Image (cartoon, rainbow, N blue to C red; front, side):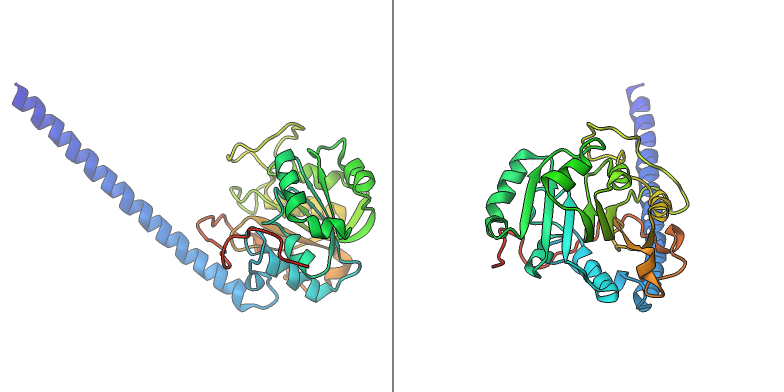
Amino acid sequence: MVKKVVKEIRKFWWFGFWQKGEYILDNLHQQRCQRNDDDYEVKRKVENPIYLDRFGYKVYSQNDEDGIIEEIFNRIGHTNKKFVEIGVQNGLESNGHFLLHKGWQGLWIDGDKKMVAELRSLFKGPIEKEQLVALNSFIALDNINQVVGVDGNYNGEIDLLSIDIDGNDYWIWNEIKCIDPRVVVIEYNAKFPPTHEWVMEYDAKHIWQLDDEHGASLKSLELLGEKLGYQLVGTNVRGVNAFFVKKELCKDLFPQPATAENLYNPARWNLQYISGHPSKKYIGK
């Protein structure tokens, strides 16, 4: 009797092992097919110089945003070289860090008190020279214009706005009225395909839990940008950030059609953009 039971258990164990093996092989096949599709799509964009994908590189940005931002301004030019960046932690890995090296002025805002204290220590030089303003504030719809326009004293036209707060990004961009950025960099939720509209429900107390409850789909951001007078001009290869430029500045400088369907990059979080050793401090003047 016992031998019979053991025999049955072994049979099911081997069946389960076989099933698991089949699942793994099937999963690998799907990944290989997806990678082939990705390779084709990336190649299509990289070979065409009007797409921004090929220009991405990392100096201090989280991914390859430094290079894409530089290329955008190579095409449209600068005005006052001012930026506002919301969501920077200690500032070392941010979209504004490299801009400071290039002589820009900026406003950094983050909701983490400890991170902002560290930021103020790391970037003491630019702050003392009044090149940089660093504010500790948890941004919401009811305070965004107060914090940026009054506390930070940033108003009117600026060159760049960057939003990375892992939650209410869509709502904050829609609400900012005190500044008029020529370029906007904002995270999108790459889980959703480029045809799908989705926006996280506004929550003033939202703190990201490392899940899919954050931001908005690229299509929803495309439509918001259009309403606000911006054109979607690209996304980075890793599928994290979307880039928008004021419509009147775009002319024939960026890809068409300017849609999520054409410019979407899927989530490729396995890709790493590593440039040298991790940043330890601000090494500018």
